[in-house]
Length: 309
Image (cartoon, rainbow, N blue to C red; front, side):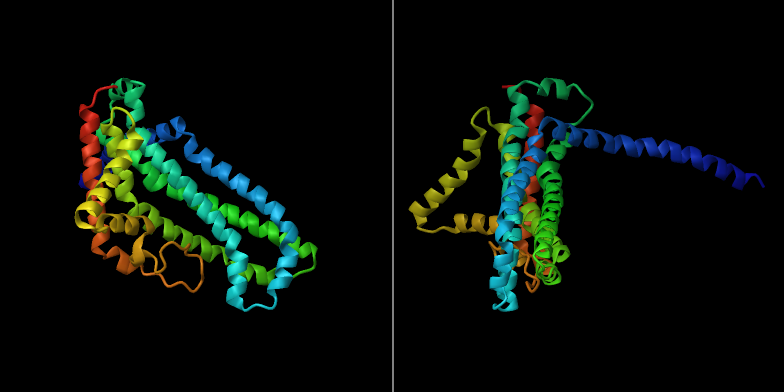
């Protein structure tokens, strides 16, 4: 008769015993990511600065928006869409280029900087494993920067939409057609897809390689990151007169046709047909992810064995 009561009494205690174990497994990673954001403020300062500069320029360009809209009235819908969305496409490209530059320099300094200033001695004295540290640093280009880029791009484009609507309304022009051409919500979803496929999955081996170089190089990490690929391309061209390695890198950087049917273009056109299933099943994606895992594993081992510079 007392068995159910005992079971009920024991279950909260079991839950309290399990909860700290779960929290203790995730808390070091959480605080390690917080540490990276605190020590590397360029992660969010640089995109914010780029967005502020762009919005300032867009605000000035709104002076000619009513005249531009009157000139577009004689064009077909596709031509109107391309002309109206051009500044929105440029804004998205600016944010992506900025975050890519930030990600490259962050990865090259992530493990090299702590050996250079000898702060690695302090961080290794804490109960945080090398795996947790490397994963926290890898989360910046793989998780934090893409999500930040999506949020800032969507917010900036929405502000642009509001400013343009206010100018058009002040001149007695239709705002509904402008909103229909921009399709802000669909544009944001397409940009998220572009970032997830190209900048996260497609560029994963590059960021892992930069982290590996950062953990290995004693000096000039930037040169060590770019000279070996360049040397391979030069030797291949001289020895075999081929460019397979360069083409492979170029396809990986552009995302390839598996992710986006038109590499090099921003996927914000409403009629663009995307193929996520084909991309996720492509052998190149999984080969790249396997290379990424190998590079990150090597970075963990190097951080464990490398001494301060």
